[in-house]
Amino acid sequence: MTLSERITINPELCHGKPCVRGLRYPVSMILDLLGSGMSSEDILADYPDLEVEDIQACLQFAARLSDVKSLARATA
Image (cartoon, rainbow, N blue to C red; front, side, top):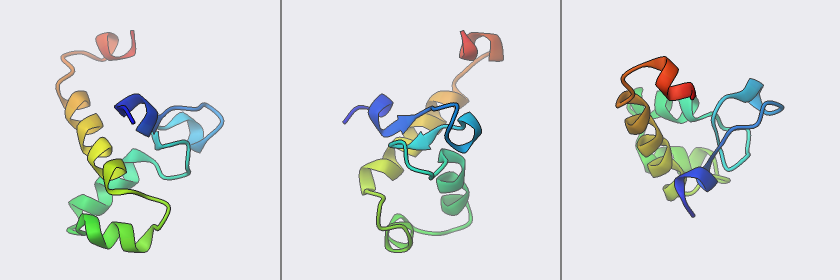
């Protein structure tokens, strides 16, 4: 699966926030869990719908967002 298949944006799901594979797991939630000290294994144990590639995609998505130089460019 590509990043665009792992991270989806649907205006009718989670208020249009980027989510994992159309599930109700926002990327921001996964990043918050990682930031709080949870390991990927802990997250996968708590959320059995997720796959290790989903967590990697969230990190890759965040890395791409952090490289954006302006919001206008990011939304274009």
